[in-house]
Length: 473
Image (cartoon, rainbow, N blue to C red; front, top):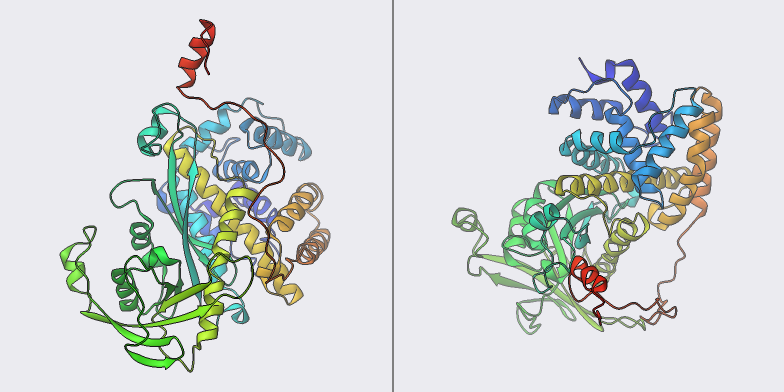
């Protein structure tokens, strides 16, 4: 039986979708659809008993937990109880065990597929005016997240090798592909912090299927690798990144000159990387035509004064040097998007105590992030502005203010619901990011943190020493 034909499933999905303006005649209201979720559940052959913590209720509570400043499970269950009472339903148990068990039972692929497809559908339906010269641009960048120090987490995502045992926290590396046009995460990879194949380059290879012919991949100097550029070029995807001077140097006296500090040179095929098999390596060409262009950074406060860009966009008339410099500057949006994901949504320190739940928590953050980006895109369309000019933090603050009213009063009144949606989008579009291209600030902090000594041995040993009256200094 299809999940979408289940009456209660449909009712619960409509409630969940309305919380993120995925209902009615608004633009982009089909990004997060009932059919998408039901198809994923059907493909996973996941069966559930119709009780309090159904898949959609569990997903909604998990997302509310991500959005809230208080990430505790107890607070999340309390929000569910208040919602049930407001709908005239009987309250569930305030204990969090049932909710935690439901999260554990749900397949990890449900979280990852819903998050991926939501981001990809948003990106596929963006306004053509948001593209760069009519072409989709994707930014690739990575970061790290930490999690509770449990034996299971340490086994799956070990702490940094140079830390003493018992003093560090499990750490995972994440790498995301962001849409430059709307900020959505179209895919994400998770791996250990260190080890063979755990680098950002290795993660990029696992995400290559996201890119389509005609796309442009934008990245920093760590991604300046001959094999990756060649593999993307074979897929019909152009590459723009900063030159990695530790691997190659630019000599503008050679090659085909296009302008001042702008030329095309041939990069010969290097030795096979240890992480690549011979069959894949032999399919790559013997050389690549690469365009190198260098420009000066004149704005004060920038650490780099000279930047050399490497790209496969060879047509100097269609893609001028200044346009490439402006495009590379937009790579900084990946840093801002990661800040929104890790700081604003508080994903930098995760709470789950098993590796599988940690990954579910990451994907729930990604899904919530993509739905907020959808609201920002809806507000941008209605006001005729670019979504990158809207504040992510402002969108969250507005969403948190409107969600209780939407949940309580707009369930059966479509006119009121439409009015609330319109007012919310108007408020979201009002919170704009100021255009301050030449602003710079000292990389220093004024407010001092409270001072505490650092642990120099595991916590249980330190507590035992305190009981014995031994100094821990």
